Length: 280
Image 1: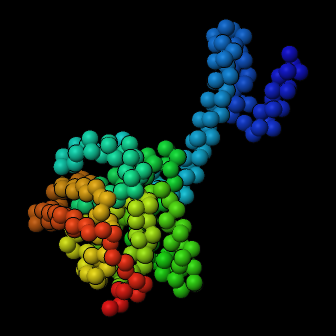
Image 2: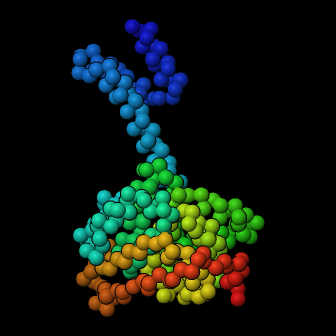
Image 3: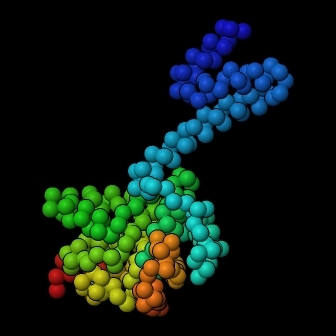
């Protein structure tokens, strides 16, 4: 019997199954006491190993995706944002929008939970085995600008285009130059109808010409980003300020409504925007 156990332990070491090796003695004790069957013993060992590996995979994937600190949909306080349709968010969590390469727009005033929801959907995608990458718009444009200066722009765009889900956070918080807007357009164009995106913004679509410093580029962006889109408007108070609401002036609490206009009418595929078109 000891020879068999030695071979099993050796096999688990050779197969790099440390968690199953740790659980072996306990599982065998259960088997000897008749608490579990032989099949259940095998299942327990494999389940322990699989669970450990899956936890490790998810942890690495979340860090690679820039989704730390983790925010889940389960931890989102829907009662604080009654304007949100909880069932609609739950439907998005099924991740069918990834398969359809759709763009999810989360619009609302600062602090209303847009980034939390975007991160939560990203975490759900990672757990489902999908590749995800998250960055603020400013971070994306900075990285693309650096790559352009170094002659690696095509490579960088391919990197961002590979992820099954790209989350672009904080659109409208910082001004974007025309050159930066053009770089973002190239990335959006590379993902158009190929990969899903989640965008968060505190600005309505009608303001994107101002956000990107060029109405031509903004129109071209919206043409693609609203073609296969899900738009979710969040109205309400700030999560981060709710503990200090009594200290905030009334005129500051009243956030302006961010109402998206109807998507533009489609006439075939969108027009192409050549590199440098932002410099008209």
